[in-house]
Length: 275
Length: 284
Image 1 (tube, helix red, strand yellow):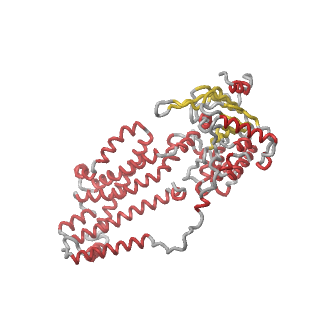
Image 2 (cartoon, rainbow over the protein chains, first blue to last red):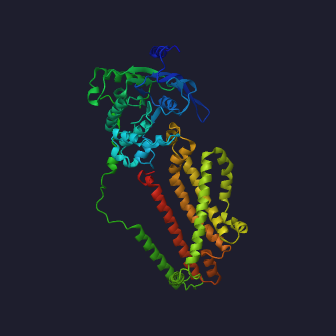
Image 3 (cartoon, rainbow over the protein chains, first blue to last red):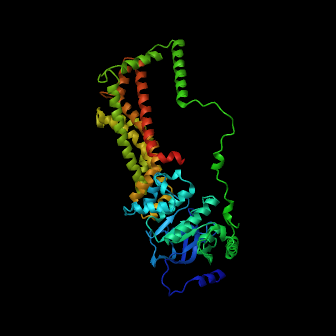
């Protein structure tokens, strides 16, 4: 490739001699076959590595394959080009080291909040009896009094907090979040972002979060990965030099904020549609 | 603020929760009151038709004669062969057993079809062929195979109960949202765990709709089998009354069967309400 983006990528790559990162993607590509016989190239040549404890946010135009990327990391989709590895091992299916937070919570409506959060301990050949862990997770998310309620009795924000608790039930090292707060109103969303920052800081998990919101990406991310339109590639890998804990009241006045937001917006606008 | 999420619209519930603008209105009549009014009108028309048209009792008896026939069937020792109690119990028992057997088979085969494309392709065309056949027409054959006893009643009831449960459980299990399957896959759940924890509860509203139909069909199947020959049952009560042109007696037996059908339907609905408790509130 002879375009300037490719050279940016080359510079962003860590030296080959270094120990494998927690998550490594090398030249990852994915092509979908449509029902009408055509092919859609969703991802092409994606290079990305994530270190333990990092919070990485991915933004990109809609349909750029960022959800596909997350699904491949979760073992829900396979990649047909390149390699994806977790702690140096190739990803082949789901792993208990990975917890997934879905869009719009995705709780099972027939189970109580507690049963939903406990679900990962019931299935997949595990029959853990550690209920204390579930209680600790629920109180961490402020849901201690709602364990016996059903999801429909909770607000959208509470449902998604339960979804995060569920993803943390097996104490995974990695949390993958696919636009988890997209369905929430702006104020609840900011509150959830602060909550997530707190949970991340106390738990020390590695987080990959996909979002449409530039402010959310800057607020939460150690790095913001900007992806191109389809076929999705990594356009830019931007570090966020804003100290933590961050708050929405102060972050906008940080000197780095406006520049970052402008740069991300510029990159996305150059890609055409922006949701 | 340079935030693209600030354009999120105000939640719609806030508007929907507002009180209606229209002024105080009269309380609407409850459903049972309206239904009772319908019954009174029907009985009035019936009585009027019998009187005005001078219909003889062997064509259409007056409501009052039907009530008398009902009373003579009900106001007896429950152990007496003359009353409705023993035949009603026999019909109910056979219909219930047939319902349970047919539904269980329907759920099992429907589940296998939903889980396996191979089994689906193997069974589906024949299931539909058999479904489009008027199953009541098979009844004489079933009587030859199972005899005039309870066996043939249960078999026909089961046959009729089978299909709605089969189709509904198949459809419901296949209707599981892909995100819920993804959740289970991300947890490395086994196929059976995914079935038991996600697909089956998700299909429950469909399955109950099938059971609701099946319970009425089971009763229908039992009565048809009894028409073809039986020692006991409400079908026998009807054929006996018919053989002596006791039309009021036929009507009375039909009323009893109607009540039984409504009660069975109500039972299924009640169980559904208990089991599928989430469906009401979350507006599925």
